[in-house]
Every structure is written in structure tokens, then in C-alpha cells.
Image 1 (cartoon, rainbow, N blue to C red):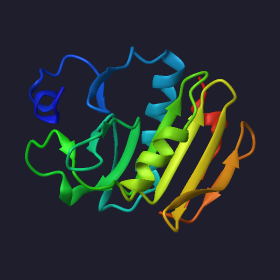
Image 2: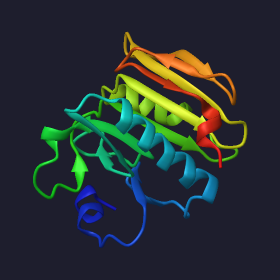
Image 3: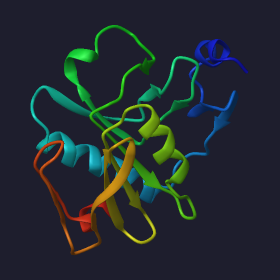
Length: 168
């Protein structure tokens, strides 16, 4: 499948475009959806007014693909003009809620190559929140938290997240 074919398909499912193929993801579990929604709420409450957290926004990582759909992204409000289907630039922050057995290795590499500076993962099974920051073209872990052990960050903005609040 070409990127053009991907972009012209109907909006009927949550599908990414990776390695020239359509990757359809099954519906997320209730715990996954709860965590993504809570993360969006917490990020919107903490981020500066010129930024906004949105769920499931597609991001074209490079001109020919891949297209990824992080669970939550923080973007500049001014970039949300028109009816664009995809971000064509790195968000300020991308967050993935990891399903059981899912690891972040491939997305860490893809996102780093696309210029993302801040990336978080939240594992629904363990309740662990892991925060990464790109330095020298690679992501380095900057903080981790687990239920009852909050994460305090100053970048990309000041925020405190207790992973307990991300679990139903």
C-alpha cells in the first residue's frame, strides 16, 4: 500500500501506516482507554495555554511514512488549523499506553528519528509510567513512577503525575 492509498481510505478504523503496510489495531481495552483519557485530562490541566493534549491524532513521521497514532499528543494550538488528517511535524510530547506484552523499542527508534523530544509510556498491567527525553538523537529515560510514586517533571512543562490516577 502506498502512503497516498493510506491517506485516501475511509476513516473506519484506527490504523497506522508502517513499512508500506496498513497496520490495523484492535479496539483498546477499557483500562487502556481510561489511562489515555486520564493522561489527556492531566496534560491539559498542566500544559501552557498555547498547547493542547489530544487523543489518537495521526502523525506522519517522514514524508513517505510511517504514520503513527500515539494515544495522546501535546501540540501547539496554532498548528490545528484546517482539516489536516495528520501532524506533519513532531508534537511537543507523545504518550503511548502500552498493552500487555507491548514494548516501546520500535516506536522509540521511529519517534527519535522523526525529531520527537519528549516521549512517555504507561504500562496498564504494572501501572508504570516511564518518561524519556531525546538527547543526541537517542531517547534516554528521565523518570519512572508507579502507583503511589509520582513523577515530577519540568520539561516540556512542569507536571506531577501519580500513576495511581491512571488506573480505574
